[in-house]
Image (cartoon, rainbow, N blue to C red; front, top):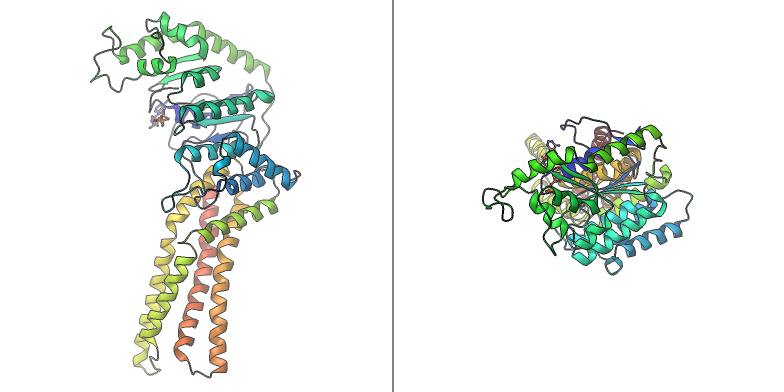
Length: 451
Ligand SMILES: Nc1ncnc2c1ncn2[C@@H]1O[C@H](COP(=O)(O)OP(=O)(O)OP(=O)(O)O)[C@@H](O)[C@H]1O
């Protein structure tokens, strides 16, 4: 816990092995006294941003994730039951069939999206779970129920949950065993959460009667507003000075000694490595689920198939009208070149138009890949299979009709023939471009994210 910008997310990123490459990290991160890479499925991480597929419903999102993550040997109906049970645990049963939503479609609220993100990561009941502000956007009752449920999961089979939290209510605060208070990258306190009150009181900052202890701690260690505040409490002590006092005092406190002692004991034990709880589904299942999910997403996204089709159709009609019957004399050479340049230019711009959706997809891929939901190969195949055949089919149908017109009517309807052929060729080129655009960047992303 700590004020905004104190380094909570950075600490969680470092612990879970997801620190950005431009950040320098020192020290060792040990699990049960051993070094172990925690990305790609060894631990689960609910990040601060909810990166979800906007077109899917809550049920579909969690169900597809269950198929990707749960063991291959588990029957499909059991995966479905686990998904539904987890949705209910997060209090989302009423919103099961609501779409997630995004910029173009109003769907779930911020707090509901938060709970969907948590659902996805607790499906496999991971041994080590990182949560970055799981209660942001939730009301106090929802915060309590969500945290209570997560802590119950932790208590079963000795799981470990590391969560950063903003403004917990006193009820939620009591649920935590240990508290690490951070301020501007420094540790203010790390130890039992029930003893934090005593630590603050001993150092001259007792929690006022009837005040939520977490509010008191955060108020004491936030120096962002020192310039406009008169000082802490009745004393003229600024938060900056309070932080220095607490940091110094913590270094020599019993809590700090206990933590160091515990770290030593754990290191000497040399315990078990964590098992990788990432995708336990087979490669074929991963490809199948990702193709299906991606196809539904593209089919429901107006801009992907439908708007593209409409634009191409309109363009073919325009070009057909302008360049119809351009003849075969020398003068037509220039007109043919113009048409070619125009079509190539248009196709290039249409390819650039797919970039925003590619960026969104990459965010989702990075999150799921780092949590070990599937491999790069399955993602590339899923993406290619969902985007290309549909467009290929669309290029074949007008092509076949155009041939029929040319053959049967012997050039009677030259205009329709010309437009249809143009459309078929464009869609064919578009499908080929889609294959390249699916494979190359996806593999590049796979290399960048590490596996
Ligand atoms: N130990 C550190 N040393 C240097 N810079 C740090 C350290 N920890 C965090 N920072 C920097 O401080 C800034 C804020 O960090 P971070 O996003 O982790 O804060 P936060 O507590 O999660 O904030 P919020 O609660 O608003 O999300 C970032 O620019 C980060 O790089």
